[in-house]
Length: 125
Image (tube, rainbow, N blue to C red; front, side, top):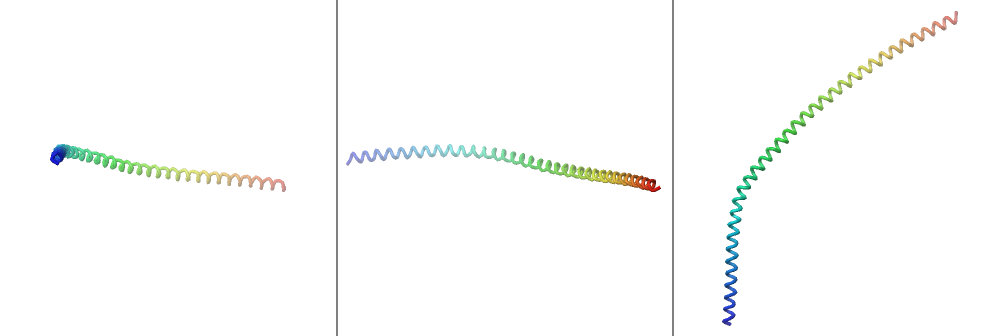
């Protein structure tokens, strides 16, 4: 039994040493973690600054895109209006051309009709 007690106390001592070693490791790890946390806090401030810069850059680009889109919309609207004006002018030109051709054809028809009437009158005589 005595030997068992010695073995038990030896095992207990080993357990205590392991526990103490683990505690020391935890303390070292905690110190490292705390140290890293400090570094992380500094890093996170840097990251926060970087994020804010990126966000500002993104917002600026977004604003530029909105302005460009507005300019493109205005330019497109202008071009559409110009095309509509050109289309109206072309329609008017075609209408005038058709009217002129119609009048010309009417005059030719009247002339042909007079010629026919003259020929008919000549034949009757």
